[in-house]
Amino acid sequence: MSLYAEHTSTDLSDRLRDAYAVTAEFMADIIDQTCRRFPSIGQSGKAVHVERLIRSGAWTDAALALIDLELPQWQVRRLVYDEGEWHCALSRSRELPDWLDQSIETHHADLALAILAAFIEAQRIAAPETRTSVPAVRRDASAFHEPLFVDNIG
View 1: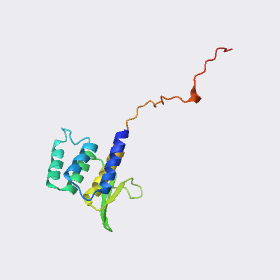
View 2: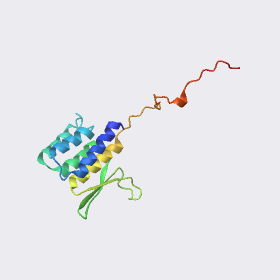
View 3: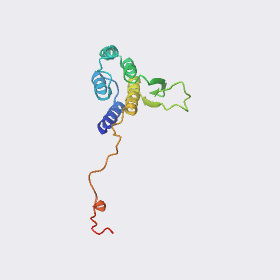
View 4: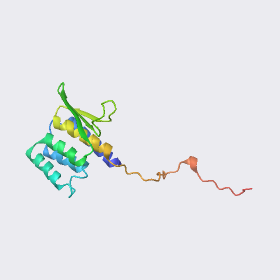
């Protein structure tokens, strides 16, 4: 994952944690910064559906539709309201027992924000890393790695 993408997901996670409710502008920021499939022509039907949900203010349905569009391999494993907070768990294989599953769990006082927090975390985990197959070498050589010229070999 690129440094920019990591910073972006951290920034969005902070904004989600501090938010009280979802707005159309906040949803637009989330889509702009995290979604790779949303503007895709092949997914236009689902993208139009998400846009309609956002325009109508159906934040929870829009968050669930974003998961369906962007992360089809992830599914909602659990949505629970407990002691004033919504807890959302996303999983790639929800048929596994809890103790074997590697799910993402988030919580927030607002249901849509709890789902969006899990969505952003799943996007961060699912994002391809931008590393090459050849390891990078630092360009700044320290004083301990100065080249030596040896004239007498033998």
